[in-house]
Image (cartoon, rainbow, N blue to C red; front, side, top):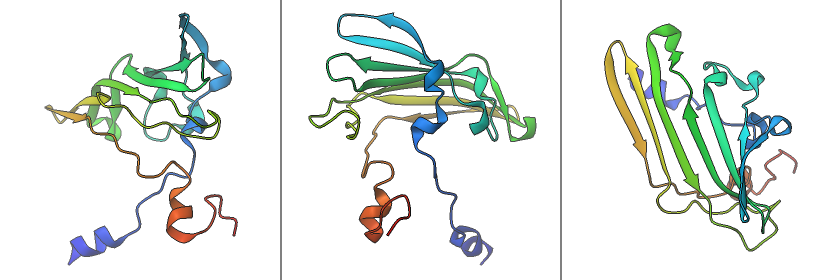
Length: 158
């Protein structure tokens, strides 16, 4: 009975676009090749709610030919305390490769390539747990899910 009440509550939804979590104006070049450029992009401190984002390093690779994102990576500089200090994220490794799109790079989202992975290690009350994700499938691009489901624009406009 209590489980039904708990699970019937609406889940919190992600309202912001993923780009709104990044301080793109503060990005700096890490490495540049003839085909791509890698940028270190800090996370916006105002997006932090339960985590100290200063300890997460995000690297974005941009394809020079298409001017689109070719890959996104993230690592942990040092462990992060969560759950009021009862748990710690001790390791984080995200490596997402994105296929280039045929359409305009500014409006189309590429598909995640096979071989992309994400892994996190967490200790909670002394017990270590490792989480790993490898089959990334994007059903609908961010912001278009509501359009497909309700026929209305993602911004809430009719």
